[in-house]
Structure formats: C-alpha cells, structure tokens
Image (cartoon, rainbow, N blue to C red):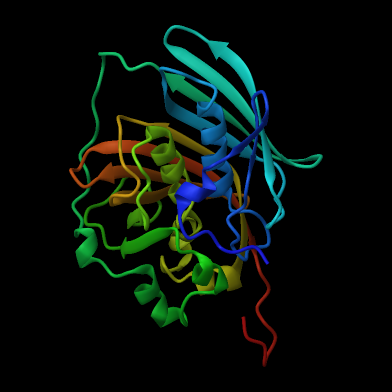
Length: 293
C-alpha cells in the first residue's frame, strides 16, 4: 500500500526520464482520485526545471480526468515560448495513455515596474486559531483522507470581520503551512503553495448553502465535488513552510458549478498569491433510515 506523504519536499522530487519528461510519485492519500493540488505542484516543478533565470508567476490548470492513487504520473513539458521577459511552458500530466490535466506555466524575469496590493484582512494570528481537527470535532471528526493528510498544517479563522461585496457568503480565513521545512528553492515553495491552495476551497463554495467551513465529513456526505480548473498568480517571493493566510470567498455559482477565490497573504500582511478555482457539485441523496454517512 502506498504510504501517505509526510512532507512535500519528497513529493516534489521528480525523476527525469528523457528530455523535458519527468515522473513523479503520488502522495498516497486515500482519495478516490489524485489530489489536484499534487498535480498542480508537480507540474510547476516540471515546468520550472526547463527554465533558467525566471520565476513562475502564473499557472492555469484544466483537470480532465481523475488520476489513480498509488501510480506514478508522467509530466511532459512543451516549450511554448522563450522571450527576454517571459518563458511559457505547457505541462501534460498522464498515467499511461490517460491524460489527467494540462497546465500552462508562465515564468518571468524579475524587473522593476508597477507594483501594488490590497491590504490583508484583519484576522487572529494562526496560534490563536483552532486547528482543522478541533473545528471538525463538532462534525464527528475528520474522515480518513484527513487522517492521512500530514503535509500541511491547517488552522481556521472562519469569522473574518468585514464584508466582501463580491462574495455570496462571509469570507473564510484559513491559515496553512508545510509541516516540514522545504529548503530554499523558490520553485519548491511555489509548488507547495499550489498544493495547499487546493485545500478547503470546496468547503467555502457551499457556505452560502448552510455548510460550516471545516466540517469536512458533512461536506462529503452532502455533495460530490470535483475541481474543473485551478489558476494562480504569484507576487514576490514567499515561503510555504511559514504561515500563509488564505482568505476564501465565493462570488458566484450556477448549474452546479461554483467559483471560489483565495487571496493569499504572508505573516507580514503582504499579498503573495491569488487563486481562482471552478468546481462542480452534485447533491448526494440522503442516506436511507438506519444508514450512516
């Protein structure tokens, strides 16, 4: 049986099998399909390994098919552009003939120019916020997925003060960091941030419908949800093994598809990333009498 990943550094060590082709391990979580954050993070590593002198500044992933846990994934990199300022790569993630996702990864050279960011929301520091497990106690605890999941520490600050005009529900504050040190390679920290960014988004998407963020067991019993795409824009350098605040909002949903955003801030209140994801939700039937979810 594949063991769950205890640290992200090992997950982001890819084996080069030929020019611009890499193979990565899976994280071993007991999910019906591979975790999308894993695929995005490993795609960033594969793309960045083919670029010198530039830093990843945006990623755009379209999820096409669910991956099989416990089987390696091949990442083939296509070099779309190499300019003085921008280098662009397309990464195709496959298991055999099964295309799982495609990711456009754009890299930019550091240069002076336009710079601004919005202020961070006022929220308690991570040490003053409950852990995800503590919040989940009122919901019967966390399921087996979270029992395996040890690579990211999660603390919740669900009552972020103030209103957000573009959100259909109050914003959720989620503090996250890698539980293990990740070294000093900026590419690994971007990949780890991508991994973490795919967490808790589904929970935010259904808060307008009475869901309590952090009650992951209830989420799994009421909705079947899958990510359709995942986009990130990075700003400056950051460390994913230090606390990052993800401010989650959900501006709209329709036909079972929900849009979720996450503005990401470091401990200094600096904006370091913005995330947008669309996810597909299907209502699950209520359990029959005598059944438990």
